[in-house]
Length: 327
Image (tube, rainbow, N blue to C red; front, side):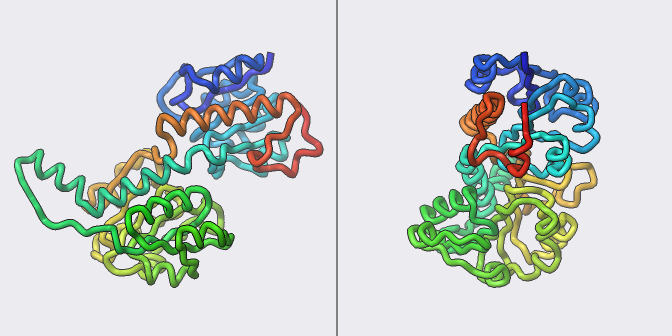
């Protein structure tokens, strides 16, 4: 009987369509205990007998993969795979899959929640009222402002749709064109420098790789419009946090809404903690009740498809190993 290890703690020992997909296909489901991402020690304990894995926030390194002789699939519940050593996975003949089209609306909703929390002073007003105050300082509207999107994949597009509904102008920087979408939603395509100069809000939706790591640094922030906001629901590694802190403290940036950080949970010395113009959420943008279920079910289906010798179209990241891959 093949086995599948459940990594995401929100799925372990939980019922749902994903579990039925796996058990109906004859898989033994391995559910470790715990309320966080699997540790290195847990991975080294459970992976040696796993044929597949539903992965969340686990670091899949060369060392870990070397201890998983039967592993054939790492099925990510999400679209990012920067925590997986893709080269090592391919070398060990492990297919890596993602779940496109399952969580873009969830991320877009969180991006707008963070933006509105900043623009409407939601957090500060709530704290003031709970402490006996009543501050009716006027908020800054988002309508009429320009939202600049760094990245225009499914998530960026979902944010753009919402921005237009809120009466915002939308501009985007992305090397991949989408003329039909741009026409339908009146999106202006700009260079990165033009985007930073013309936007009141910058929202990050780029993948984390060697090209984009540390993209939002001192120079990037200095090019942003004075008084603008930064939203990051993508990856913490896109931002140099010490540089962001300096920009926020100086007042050049009005605020930042961040769902992701360089280290999660943040360490005590994180330079952004305690700043009044920073709104934080615990890397939950892509995981609401509906998207988590959809991601888990699609991840499970990719495992079953591969076990049945079918290649799940649009979900495999390292497709170059297809010809020599066997289960």
